[in-house]
Length: 480
Ligand code: AMP
Ligand code: ZN
Image 1 (spheres, rainbow, N blue to C red):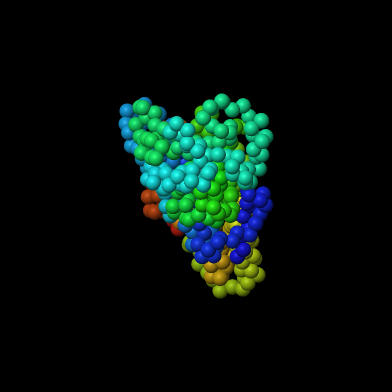
Image 2 (cartoon, rainbow, N blue to C red):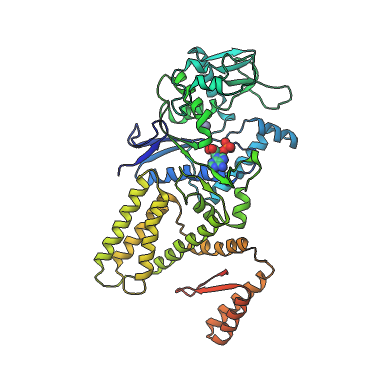
């Protein structure tokens, strides 16, 4: 099936055509690992994972590179404050980040390079830029000569002249042009982590790492590059300038950016201090709920972080997995429901078309909910094996392409109780009594003591707990 992806280079949807039809070369800018990630970072990470999954679901092999920025001012500062080596600090947060990614149900990337391990390739690329006349050295510092790169602005559409006049740039005597940016900077005396280079001991500027890592792992020209919309300028514009000037060929065919996750009217960001970390959220709620929230709007639309979006996600995760549970138990009968089977087939094509249309997850999810509605209505009567299999294909496709459908429905449904409790602020003092009563009720039902079972249900009701008995004899429960 043909996939269309919105390309920020051309500002239009284009048919996605990887250079090698059998292998998509995909790079996504990963996090700077100096602290725990927040739910805004989760949006960027999950969107990249959704691209990765969808491309695979459409039959592509994908080489997916997502970096960790482990050399950075903030890492040096945090490590210094803790009295440890910067690498120890950065590695600790790479591990925390991978724990969060796993909790979000993300597939592993093919390669997850760090800056510190890519130093030889970074230095070679800076040397190439100097050789080609795009880099210049001043007192141990190397700059990129922006006006020399004639295509500067082709992604962000910024015009160099207006940049020069439009912004107040601190007068940096070393730069030839205010827009020139650092490729290599000398180490300060007490920085604690630096590398030898032809320009003295130092470390790279931020932008060069992605150009060097993409080239090392994917080659000179890649198919798809992703990051949050804040990276479009200057980071991605500078990546293009570096890669194309060093390699002498186009860097990337298609640029995709996810919009912000906002808190109130502002972007969620550590510098604004308005963050909810992935860890804190998933401890109280769950990775499945967070994944559902961040994919609940199209990746190019803004997402407002509110209690309402959390409540809505809990309800939807429940609807999907209650149906998945029923589906796993459904038994086909002999009946003529060909028209219903065709209806589900159409929904499956609809889902695939939505995902092929610039990864429209909300559109595809809308079709899955129509399938769920149809199944829930029909499961009370006779359904054929054909019908059940078609519904299963819909769930399978959404699981493969979006990761929003999980196999372990029982544990997903039970996580929702905890989530509802947190949202309503219900006291946890009753938890022990609730668990005891639930276990007693199970025994009472097993021994057909329905009087006791009803008494327990009433007591649970007083404690704000609702019970739902499942067809397979298990019970799920939640706070009202
Ligand atoms: P950083 O560690 O700040 O470079 O961020 C890692 C990734 O998260 C980048 O792709 C950013 O664009 C993205 N990101 C950061 N904050 C947000 C946000 N509030 N909403 C969406 N993406 C974000
Ligand atoms: Zn990058």
